[in-house]
Image (cartoon, rainbow, N blue to C red; front, side, top):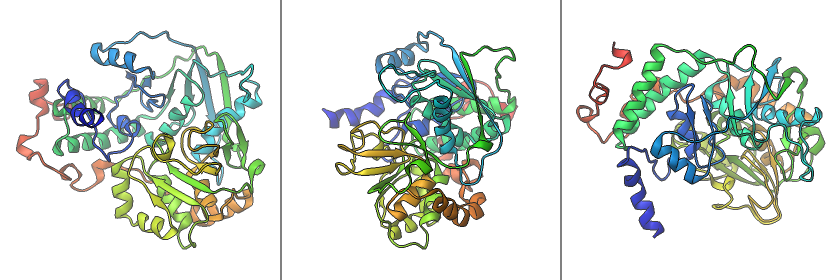
Length: 428
């Protein structure tokens, strides 16, 4: 039955106007972000359906099916907690450290506790609204919105610039057009979304919060005060600690993967490992999408992973899901994944959550580094190359990308004019 369902489901969805990914494409969250429109509302049957554009409210599969069939869903609109950033990112501190800074500061302010008994959590059931980081790329913004699941938020939204969002949508127009060229279905649905993206690009306007908006709480985080990495220690995403509090803890396995990662993290990981001897841990590498994997192979990054002795996985969830691959029983793991609940990644495993950069150093040393060790490695291997490492996939800037893997001749491609009965916004 499972084999039959796996075979029949794509046609089931596409015949109803849905879009189905293919084996090896990667993580649905990372793909779904590429199909979003700004300032829209969505849902999904997984807690990490956390849009970096607009807002999403994850729900159970029955409610998601209801929303898919009718285009509406019942919602009780919760209060919001505003997280406002100020200052500048400090040397050696990554965006993942800023993700962990949110619970770290909330704990300091008495708004969050780690213990389950009489637990206090200002975020639970509320919307997290994030501002103060307008120039983040959308791929980066997803690190922040995605992690709102671990805060038990009902939803999350982040304020980005028109320029950032426009860049992302131009890239996604090329990606969705290529999906149609590759024979993905439903082609009309994909091209309708392309038309909507182009329509927004012709008049790019983003919603903003009212100046007199009221919040359940306002949490201000000064980036100038975060001087070292922050990790989630075993085994709770709220159990956040400074690197200096956990340094030198031995590590047996390292995982760089999940929807919390993007292509820049893998380049940075490889740069840390480049020229070094084989890693001292078991190292798992699993990019989120086939496009990331393809580009990393083209750049020779996978050769570095191979030389380091890493195990590379097909794009997807891998260890993060806990029901596919597993780490060895009782090991200590440093992971870039979403959560570190007891026994999720492996029986009796102790799991740290943090940045890919710190994960790479852990793999190289076989332990969590001291702050000085980490800063020295980052200063030598990451900072001088940051501009090249942290580039993102702009498909519209890749020569001939729309024709890659083409199985649908150009003359047989669905025309937006025919689908909508009118010319595209770009063509008007």
